[in-house]
Image 1 (spheres, rainbow, N blue to C red):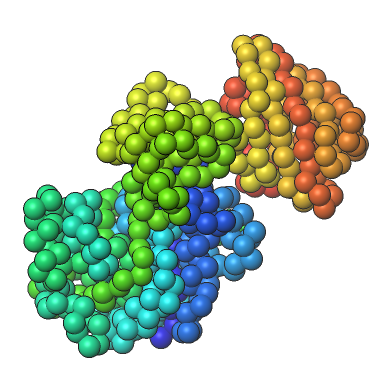
Image 2: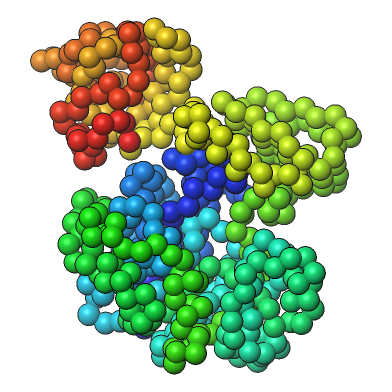
Length: 485
């Protein structure tokens, strides 16, 4: 049977704030290597010695252009980008993908379900695990990748296998049950017994098998997803399920909605143990475990000077971090935020995010450098009456035709050539040249060249919010959007 990788890319990664933000979460960050976790996930699929379709990505509306851009930049094809109308957890997301595959393929397709934000150091071990599960998944089993524990972790759910999985010659064993995150003593007992493995959240099963299982265990969820996909619409690279129908669908994880319930209902559930250097990079502590460390046990990224400091995670996205005499500390510096905490308290970073949201602060969702489908902008300076931005426009990209009621704009080109629409005029602006966009005038900015276009924009006016945008034309389908997305 053919395999289609299903990349689940809906997470927000708030426990890695301030690096991970709601609109630019951890799967799109280069946390461990020179590639994002999302690109690493897609990359490790390419070497499978099996008949594999291009990946099918499930993500939310806000991340659609990040997914498309990172796939394009890495040179990967895809089988579609499914946009969840709203977050409903993993069980409905996977069912949307299953319904899409059944709609577009006459034969049954195996679904290799992979979260977009995991680290797997041994790609060879991962490929071997996939190959071991092929037969079981092709004959109707719901299969899961169990991670061989390296320590008695309390932050993961566990899977209890029918036997000591690591000693089984075929590597594939039946699943007895799923258990919740244990306390320390219970976790130690699990590891000692040898029948418990970490629940990775990675699965292999056919689209038909998953559909039948979900129909049996959560029929309203199944029906809602199928109905939403029957009325789905194609929007360039994106597939949009019907919003109204999907919003009525119950929300739940695949573990609770399907896997825990099908055991004993006649649907076989099997696992393969995998020792592949896996991590879900779910916290700053787990990131420290997977990045290189110096002789003092410090994990450092960016411009860092650590003097008499041990077992720290020190990350600088901008500027120098210098530490003296620190132990077991977390220091993260970005362009607009600094986080300092003992590593033992790093899980509490979600409390910071909650407070930022309550206060309506953009630092919970946006970096200072904001990604758009046409490129990026960095807000350099701002007061009540002016704002300065560094705007980068990708080759071939174009900002929407728009106007502002409460601000004017001055553009200075510092790299590339800008093609400017201002009222009825269309003209080029070269390096070291500038132009003025009066308040209330329709305007647009395009990069028709092959090099990156960079401009310095100075906004001036009584109100400078992004919701003061009236769009008339947009090649990214955002004409009806009330804010820049």
